[in-house]
Image (tube, rainbow, N blue to C red; front, top):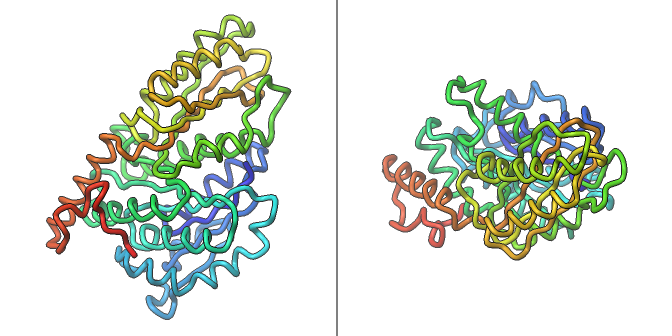
Length: 357
């Protein structure tokens, strides 16, 4: 899938750069443009991708201080400037636009949903938000911000691909190491998803293409992604159980939104050397995903890739009713109340959460 990436806020800029670098290093050529947008000048200075500073007349390049309503206002006021920066990047060959943001900070959580709305108004192609939830230890303001941003982004984007910061952090990681681990995990998983069907080595039996990804995410709402790999035998027939095993690991232990298994639709991509990929194993794994998710809409295929390993990449769409999302909304509501926010008692539930705008 050919995509254009737009990182909003500090985390969004860093993850966008990481995704672009992964795509370049792997030679996939799926990322056709990358831009980082922020209200804080300092957060843009160490990025190697193109950047755009917005809201200078309001915050003088110092950021919005965690105020996501101000972040949304500034993005709305500067939408034309951002779209001008994107001119020439979003060409007819781009199949989707991906807005990347941490949902806890001010610029990202407020600006990303607003930018998604503006992009959908202008372009007739899918606009996805890749949103990162703050960890439990990141403070009440971030939890409250993310609660409102999550609901707004899920409404405004064609799909919200959600990453729980706590899902991929190691238990002994420092804050910096934890963020780096999460960024690397996002780059690998989402980067491989974008590359599916773009740059392949060898000829697969049923190669996943962009339409499979778009159709899986077509239902909207919240999506998650998981990945696992293992050493593969040179004999494809011996990899039937290996493919099933890595698929189980991807779904049950490595999703970006843990414990969210039931889904409206799903996509299974099995990557590896075409000579080592078993069609029987892929089909068996696809049926297992169908049973586990309760979905009758599970697409599957292979991604030929020069490697001595076999890997499974899973995308679940329609997981917004999961226990994990409900638990986060409860945490966001508690955080807002602890700060003395005047909110409706049901504001942070899935159905009643007030949006940012």
